[in-house]
Length: 44
Image (cartoon, rainbow, N blue to C red; front, side, top):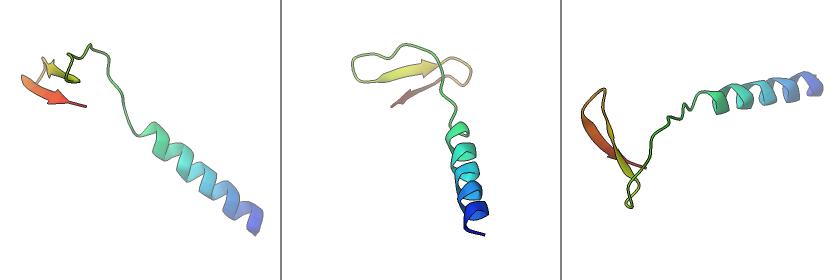
C-alpha cells in the first residue's frame, strides 16, 4: 500500500512538471519580450 502511494505521488509530480511549457525567445534587460502571436509584451 505504501509503495503504491509513493509511486502515485511521483507520477503526479512528474506530470505536473511537464505541464509547464517554456518558449524560446530572447528577453530584454527587464526580462520582457513581445509575443508576436498575440501582440502582447510580457515579462518573466
